[in-house]
Amino acid sequence: MKTDKLINLPAAGPDVNAPPLWHHTLLIGAAVLVSTALLLVLLGIRQDLLAVAAQPVFVLKVVFVAALVLSGKIACKHLSLPGARLAMLPVLIAVPLFIMFGMALLTLTEAAPDQRARLFWGETSLSCTCLIAALSLPIFAAILKVMRDRAPTRLRLAGAAAGFTAGATAAVVYCLHCPEIAAPFVAFWYVLGMLIPAGIGALIGPRVLRC
Image 1 (cartoon, helix red, strand yellow):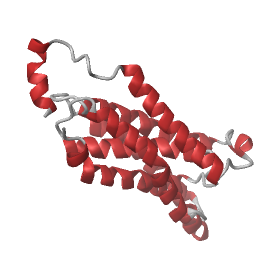
Image 2 (spheres, rainbow, N blue to C red; image 1 turned 90 degrees about the vertical axis):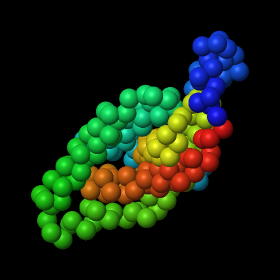
Image 3 (cartoon, one colour; image 1 turned 45 degrees about the vertical axis):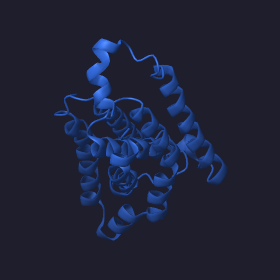
Image 4 (cartoon, helix red, strand yellow; image 1 turned 30 degrees about the vertical axis):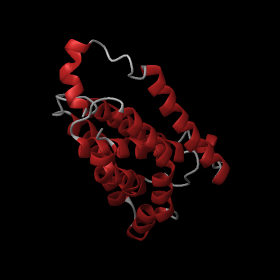
């Protein structure tokens, strides 16, 4: 186990077999490019992307998923090391979720009753969730490889963090195609797309991340 290796590190010196940081960065970057290429080939970019990118609701969507990517990255970094403090990690993830859920509730409250279902369901709810989960797979595999090269001890949490981060990163990629920008839609269906790989990560983490 990697925990045993860590105990012997002071005596054994630096682990010369550990991949360098640039190797991990390159691996994850390549995985993001693969997911982006899949989106471009299979789905394409929405034709009005430049026009819609100036709308505040679109900016809010991108900032939201990007904030979850950053929070997930921090969580993965901490969960890759034994003994790291985790007290602030739930807060880092909860803050952007709380803000987006608040915006979604405000949007639904101010909308006319006959418009609320459309704001929540949109036109691509189920496909959106499935596509985010599918696009996350190359990134998910890369993050698991990086975490396995380190020394995670909370394997189930580490797997969940890897899946959630991959899902959030895939959601950023999916923004290039997605026709939906309403806050209620993003708050539920985008997050559900992130939770699917997170749940898979929690299930396979103890097996995949154990050495």
